[in-house]
Amino acid sequence: MIPVDIAIIGAGPAGLTAALYAARARARTVVFERGIPGGQIVTTDWVENYPGFPKGLSGQELGDLMLAQAEEFGAEVKPFTDVTSIRPVDLDFALSTEDGDEYLAKAVIVATGALPKKLGVPGEAEYTGRGVSWCATCDGALYRDKTVCVVGGGDAAVEEALFLTKFAAKVYLIHRRDELRATKCIQERCFENEKIEMVWSRVVTEIGGDGSKVTSVTLASTAGEEDLVLTLDGVFIFVGVDPVNALVADDVALDENGYIKIDHDGRTSWPGLYAAGDVTDSELKQVITAAAKGASAAFEALRYVDDKVCSI
Image 1 (cartoon, rainbow, N blue to C red):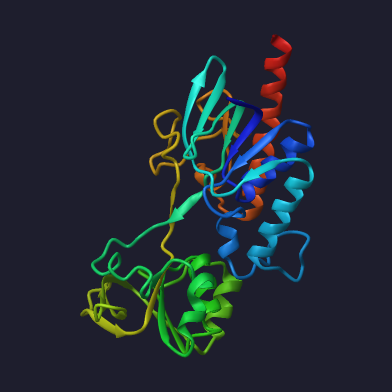
Image 2: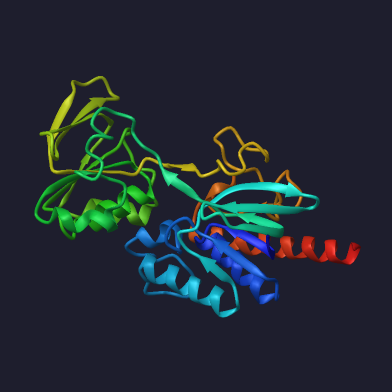
């Protein structure tokens, strides 16, 4: 097995901040990321509420800066490396990867984040990648001068609707309630944009297509009105996220929604295993809170490792 001090699973803002703190403390730190480092923030067009960047920056730029800083202090980041299991070995943790490598860590920080929820309606699976998307930044340019809809009412949905107006001729914003949940300043920008049309008190019941691409959505009313069919070219879904907890779901305490329960310092119910970011039951899911929780988890993991060394 390859020995490390602290293994971090996930290279989003929480994982990369944890890596920065752990590596800066001279702990041998390895970060495993199943995809591209940076986490979901790299799919965000613009970040304007992260301290230190008054004019804002793209999610990709922020993710790249976090990665570079963690690596500058010596953290080893392994992209496209999926951890398939964690098991106890005495007081340490054995981690297996899909490549067949084995690591022995003194402490582990889980920062696997969350993935967008699906609607679970007819046509969603059939037309995924052919008109159905969960990433406006990734796919928005494909809909230049076309008509699309965004499903959701939170910050992510409204921000992505605004981003899509750079390309699309028209953007329907479909929300199950009669008012948005997004931050007021974001709502104001939405209502001022002439390309966005609000569709209140509606839920998607079916995504229609011609066999090769999306052509429509069918909307049921939550206010007792008749169904509505919109003709369009693309559907972007932002109705919340599900925590990526499968790796430790049977080993740590979870809340009723599947988020990992942590204390104020990132401890889970498994001694020596910490968690941070969107996979945890922390209420506010923002880049800054993920980074803060990553720092706390790293600090406590470092203390845990030091206490084990001193007790030998």
